[in-house]
Length: 152
Image: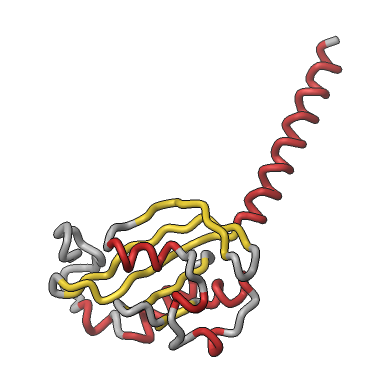
């Protein structure tokens, strides 16, 4: 349960003890399967997890970032704001200044026994979305043009 809202964070079949299923390796595999970039920091802002999409999309080696303070790596980051305010942020456009990369980020605090123990942030790189949007606009214009030609 989310200690703040009493909502389930994980739903498994009733007869499966979740602690037997969701060990550290299991959770790391789940997070690494996510196509969007994921970063997790502890309550002090130390980076404790980066998924493979994070390292792939941002072209960084996770070994250079793990254990570092998010304040030193990305002082403008959404996850740092969440650590400071203890409030979730959803779908906020942001820029990773050090890399000049535009992202759409969502982040939320992580609570254990009513105490904030960290935060997680998930974001997607906007360049691919912008490229797809431009392609969609181009194809829509082409469709409209061809439709007008057929109607005239």
